[in-house]
Length: 141
Image 1 (cartoon, rainbow, N blue to C red):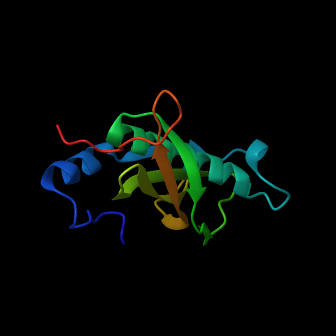
Image 2: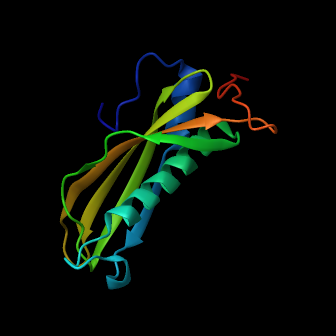
């Protein structure tokens, strides 16, 4: 599902909440976070993705969340040192106690107008209560 589409099975209230919870983070890729190929470490990208997904999921439900899985992560393009990376996270599925967030990273050249899709993945979170037991992720007010 493209990042810009809101799934049709969601209610109007939930669709609005999804739209408002989108998270965007921009990072500069410095040599200190690159590998021997002078490209972003995959683990660093995964960390950025998990954090941005967590922000979007938390903005959506305002509950305590834990990451329970990361689905297939597609590394389509390497991200070189000296570039910018925009991480965009958006809720794509809301279950009873879980929430899935699609995350895309786009790489931008720092000194010219060029932007490409680089990485995509989906992260699943579960809402937990004070006893760390799963709890309802969405309650319409």
